[in-house]
View (cartoon, one colour):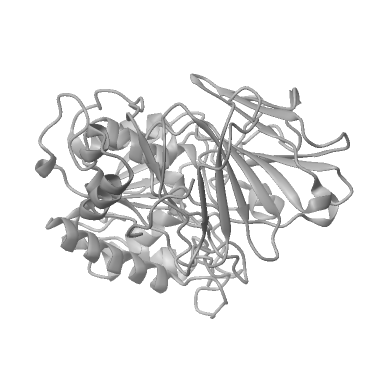
Length: 471
């Protein structure tokens, strides 16, 4: 059924409580801004934390990290993740490029968002936590855009602080060239010890040992196979920071994995978190954005006119359980919610957008509420059109690694995942049998195990099945 029309402001306790009151009178959700974890300090003692996604990504990648902080008592209203409007970096930082952002534009967007968070919470400083390019945006903001006085701690996960390559003679204007002026400026010696980090802020870098595809001495993952990058596995580390290594973790996991959460919590608070598990809520409110396709790749600008339907499904078969729980057409902000569900209910999201395929996105139950359940419509490509059904199995918060992980799609090893350094986050199958059957995606890596079951849909109707993992 349709949900009532309520405020769509995506952050802030007053708006959260208004939504909750309209959707449910349950005590758990009425305490949406309360301290939820056991044995934790009072909410007012916690510094706001601002999360910054990586190149081409969106705020939704921080969903499980937000859940973990909330589960250990960090107030929900003091946790915020930004959606940079144009998340992709320019090919050349000094040359305008439609749909992409310069280092200055990204830092200014972060600066404005931090000011809003400080004003809303009444805090004097924030903690910044970033993945990949997000860490460069943070460093630029702190060093060059007045952020040093407003940031207490900064955590950089997998940030290419010395570039994905270091070659001052080739494309020096690229933001990720360690030999170019942008990174040389950020890394210039500072303070009495010649540190690379800006004084006055406490810095933590989290990196892999040798499993980060953007910190490799050979250029396979940046379109330079067989050629040296002049970058080492230690590229994300910084002189003057606390530098932590998570062995075997990939470029995204060093930010989004439970191990990365534990390191971040300990750095901010001075002690290990009581737990890294996610504590379910009694009832769950979901909302997010449908992103508009950009001229140069993914965009975090809202898409108007997208249709969203949400169905309860049987977790074992993907079959729908009754009529739609929620149905909405987006306006200019692209927001598709809010809707109410439970922490045990598997869901199917049906996303329709002009000129795009209709995506049937299957998700495991959401244990907690989230306002960053974001979607990006996509198109079927020419190679898909001969299939009767197309299924994509995706892991947004990490890459698939072989032989590190067990990744099964439709009862077989998921195709298209090369062995070695993990660098692929999606596997796609094109099926020839009749649509309308169950299809299973299984993922296992160490203690993390997740299964998502969906249904196949006819490609001839411009439909696509997506099995999306939380972990």
